[in-house]
Length: 111
Image 1 (cartoon, helix red, strand yellow):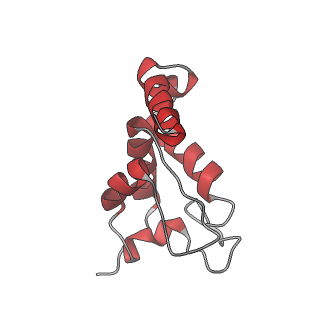
Image 2 (image 1 turned 135 degrees about the horizontal axis):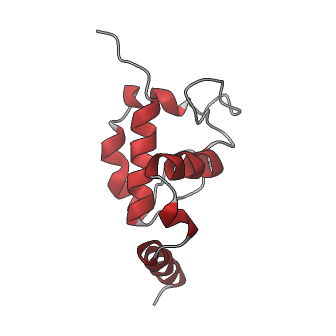
């Protein structure tokens, strides 16, 4: 078994079994994950500027993508054409938490 597959399975098993993250509300878990994994470059909340000028604020994600469409990429490995952006893989419960959080911070679309 490939090491990355084994690690993903271990994370999925840990999420299924429970523990500290399981007791945390999904919105809080999503905010924690986005802040930890994305906040180094992107503005990860409802306000503020991104630390990296080329990294758009995640509250404006809807201008490029429907956050719901990121589920597969977050589960199987989010790869971009940006060399500074690392690859991310999340277990199913964390994917749902990240997407729910991203949806909760989106700015209103004009119209």
